[in-house]
Length: 483
Ligand SMILES: [Zn+2]
Image (cartoon, rainbow, N blue to C red; front, side, top):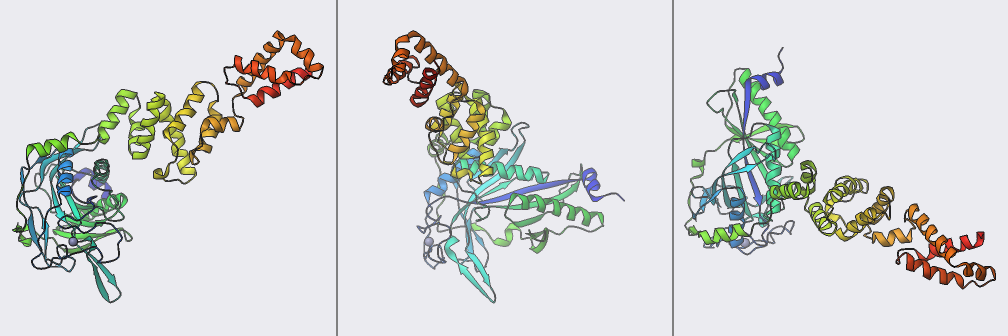
């Protein structure tokens, strides 16, 4: 019997498009002044506008528009010069107005792309991005269903990809890359668990080289990258099995059950005309000038890919290391600021890739809680370069200062960690000084202990203050005793 996996590989291709909803990091909602803070007491953050009271008039939050344009530019979209909101009509208790304000006819951005692989430059088309409001949240308790409208009116951006994705791996790469971008741009915190980054997967299968697309299903409720991967594997296998058994796929919405690891039919998929979209008469069209767009474009922060290129090309960091460093804002910051002080990018990268990651794992410290300051990592690296400590001791010092943020120079001194070679250098210098001062030996033998202070002073001068006074004193006594 030929396995399903084999049939899948040889005969079918998977066609995936992803709709991603992200909650924006704005202080207030999209059409009113209510707070967007997550986790507030139910129904404590709402007003007549976001609960859809008759006669309440919405007004667009300019920050939402700015963030949407920022994203449209970063996703290489054509930013619309005129954009407009539409009403998407449906009746459900989480939506008190019985319509959601969204964009269908004139979205804020169209025809962009996202590069998901630095090496192959694989581009996933972006069909459009649009702004909309989130709905409230239903809370199901035994026999009752409660409603919390705090989320109603929280600004969302929906990013609709073209059906350019052909595997679960590619889908995860796309979402990861999109997530980095949204965080870099300060658009969203993208917490999948809190629902601020949600992906719906549209998936169909077709025989390889077939012109026609297969019938697609939409999967919702994917709250981790792992769930996305599992859901795509499951659903593509399910569809192929249905077709191989002579059945046909129904266009429907399916819910992913992460515990059962399967998708379950929810409802027959609606077409957009089922929603009777029409322009919202309460909100005038938005006219966006080129100056406004250019101004946002010129203030875009450095994005992940640009950062990776800079690390590789300017500092000679290997691509795989650069990718790890830029994956977390805190690591990138520690890296860049330490390089600024030391000008030793390769060494700094090693300390971050090897030791920082190791200690974070060993001590179970979250990347956001790194206390180590760039100036202290720099001091450590410079001590190794200057031959004051060797790499074994450096690791010991690194582990000790990592979560205490002690000054490594002080730590090395206090713990007597200056390398042995230096002790010997010190002994040599002191021997030479004593040879040059035979009188001091005589004085010492005659009980004039004060001569030690005199010899310490001489040594300090020769060592340009680099010697440890306590250790110098011990060595001097040792030598004098043996003479
Ligand atoms: Zn409100």
